Length: 206
Ligand SMILES: CC(C)(COP(=O)(O)OP(=O)(O)OC[C@H]1O[C@@H](n2cnc3c(N)ncnc32)[C@H](O)[C@@H]1OP(=O)(O)O)[C@@H](O)C(=O)NCCC(=O)NCCS
Image 1 (cartoon, rainbow, N blue to C red):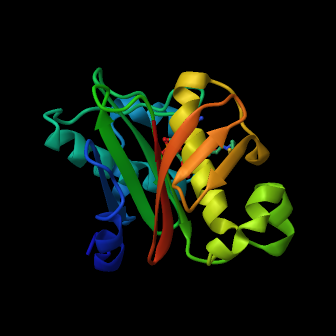
Image 2 (cartoon, rainbow, N blue to C red; image 1 turned 60 degrees about the vertical axis):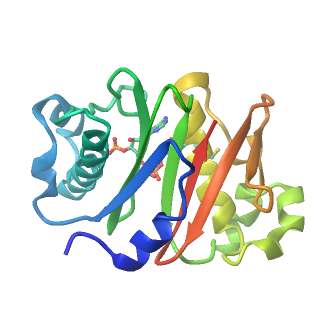
Image 3 (cartoon, rainbow, N blue to C red; image 1 turned 180 degrees about the vertical axis):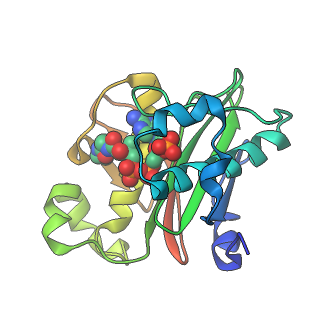
């Protein structure tokens, strides 16, 4: 089995029109899914890393196929994000068990970021590093005591980095979970969507 029905049901609630999202349970052999154009960036990586990145690309390629792009290579750029075919953009993420991808077209969005984390509370010693004082005042809105803010901020970073090309600290992003928005220090406002099941998954887009 390469999918988790509970996670699949939760992910189905995540994307707005114009963005498609899917997942795959990382499986032995997924490392062989890396195409020759992609493999170079991972030649020094451990097999678990190549496997997770291969799994994420299996998911992304299936989504791209739905948009009419067949068997597209998604090489990792030197700065980190994958290089998407013209007219398309998206984002990849993986934990040790699951790989996910989100894809949309440049006609409907200018940036997409996705992140996945195990559904466990954030370690208390990381709370101040990850959350701003205003977010900590709203911590009751996060059943995972800060981890929801963490996963949203990582998704936001992935959404804006390909355009803004600047590093962000966690405190450079202020998340309003109730209104599903994140505001960056540079003033950019990003929409966020969030779902909780076997994992916490955040999707950011603008
Ligand atoms: C980019 C980053 C968020 C990825 O997080 P991670 O937990 O290491 O890994 P994930 O599994 O969630 O995501 C990995 C995927 O992100 C993508 N990615 C890597 N760097 C990226 C970047 N700068 N921008 C967008 N996407 C990026 C890649 O597709 C990668 O998959 P691949 O290696 O198979 O190609 C992290 O490595 C990083 O650079 N963080 C620093 C910035 C930050 O987190 N600031 C605080 C939040 S604002």
